Length: 83
Image (tube, rainbow, N blue to C red; front, side, top):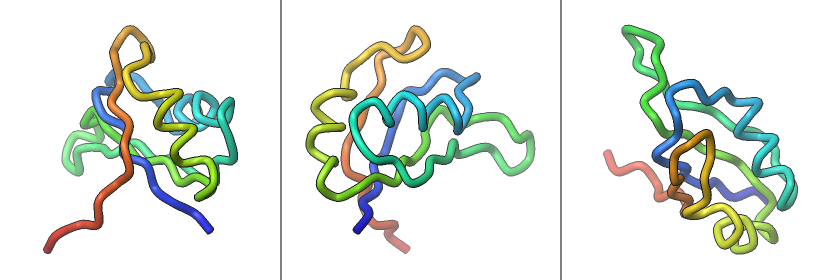
């Protein structure tokens, strides 16, 4: 099964590919996506990475607080969207 990680404080220039590659070093990554502004197309500075359930804790421990493109990123389990 897959779980989704929230990744915050990303540099504006981060791509989906770069995010996938960074997390792939620590386990199985199914997909990643950077959230962008609908009007400008510019990154909003956060994204989501879909990973193997078994790798969640390992990835959070390995990546949370690390330097990514000159910024200290925040990584935790994504919370379900509240409507």
